[in-house]
Length: 273
Image (tube, rainbow, N blue to C red; front, side):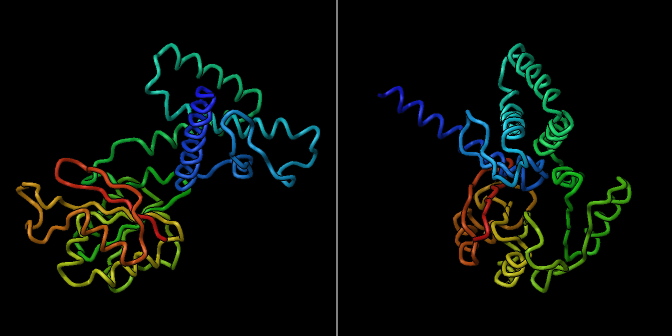
């Protein structure tokens, strides 16, 4: 009985991780239709599909289910393979290659691998825009009130030949030039304390909430108050993580997680309620 309970709990953890991976991946990349239609409810069985997902229940159910299950398993493998021994990683990879050929999903799996690598690559926040992680179908909107910053971003866009990045000169508190509920993710880096110091936090946070989609994510990166830094704002205007969380919670956001973003910064991830 104890072993059965342990197995059940392990299965639930694996299912939870798979569902989390699919949701996170789908926020920045498009999933194949056969995966979108899947109801992922069991880590060890092919996902269930609605009747609309296949025309011939007898002849098409198994292949469609197996394609979705293979793709989901591939995402799990991508997440874990760096921690596997080389021989094991190679053996499992070869099995996936054979399955991909049988079910004609090799292109989908290769695209997922490239996209997954983009989401995990290190980004130089001073010189490299976060354009890569949104994938070929996504867009990045850079907004700043300082003309020199917007000019620098536009220069980088031109030099890299980017087509999925836009830079806007705008005051967030007065209006972001984007439609309501139009973005999945907003990053506020080293400016939340400025919103508070300049008494524009309520207006700025209302505007961020306006452009975020329901269930969207707001990430705040700011200085630890106690961090000794040669640059950055004075310590007396910095916000502690708890202060930032309370401020955002008062404007319709809920905490998702808190972590470090280097030696001097924290990263607070909030979801739009």
